[in-house]
Image (cartoon, rainbow, N blue to C red; front, side, top):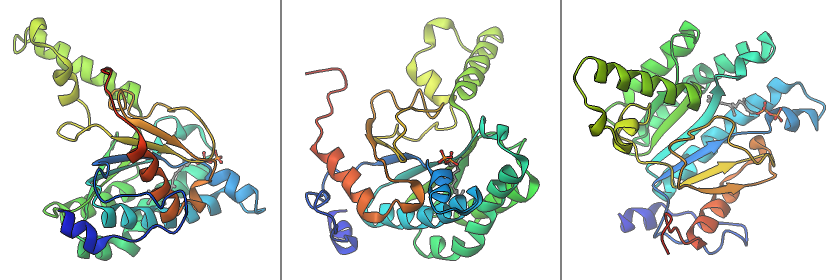
Length: 254
Ligand code: FPP
């Protein structure tokens, strides 16, 4: 593992990231990719230009995470609340997974990346689901980084649905209330079988969770930056990981 890390390690370029070590790399990093609209506005461009450039940052950070040996990268690409945006913007966002995968899938495969998605597929356009399903099928046996897109994802709905499934199991006599514990909940979430994020990153200066992985982030370290997502680079990512490595995680203990 360490050999692999050293061989793929890219020396961080910024000072703040210079203390990055190959040990204690977070296993699971989750990112709220925010600030695409403001990035575009600050350049006099339409909002969709921010989303399009944001897609390029997705590629950069996926490769950076892979090089460091991160095992899971979960990216918040579209929330259950994002449908409230103008239709033209929603339509554009729904085409991005398809465009991204058309350009990048072969390289993701070459790098042993496995693509997954979490969220409510039923409401997504057919072309979006088809592109993701093809990518998931073609990468299903890959053993490297797991690139998990949160698409039409909302944490409160995810938890409410989990409670409903558990209640049904109790009603049907398959489960007794005494048997319900934290792992019962975890097993009924989209992230069943995936460890909780070690590190949450949110870009663009906003300091909130926006209905993202509320259960799974209970003990995650959080790192916020004012940088807008389209400008978020490998060196910013290294800065976040270096800060994570300086923190002592106590999980409520001493
Ligand atoms: C939030 O910024 C961003 C989104 C709602 C969309 C995020 C999507 C991408 C970064 C591209 C995804 C790419 C793939 C491959 C799925 P915002 O629009 O809310 O920005 P603002 O707060 O500045 O308006």
